[in-house]
Length: 115
Image (cartoon, rainbow, N blue to C red; front, side):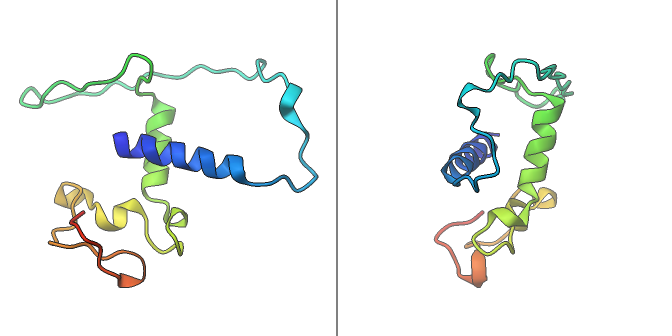
């Protein structure tokens, strides 16, 4: 979960650094309060033998937030050469590891740690 938040923050910073192409309105004074915001909480069934989830009060899990995280996790466009997603190395079927001692990255170059 923390990794997804870091990724989302990185993407926000990246998007903020992109220049305008001249066709976008200057929204310094745009009023966006008319856009409805009605986040739907996500109900999570945690098995009895699992520890309780620690969900910050100021950042609750929502249906839309989890859907966004899932899209980002599987999106290859976020890698250096658009060939790998987080799921390339963090395989759900292997408990989000890749089963290797050292994980290969972009262009097959081995990193220094395991996924």
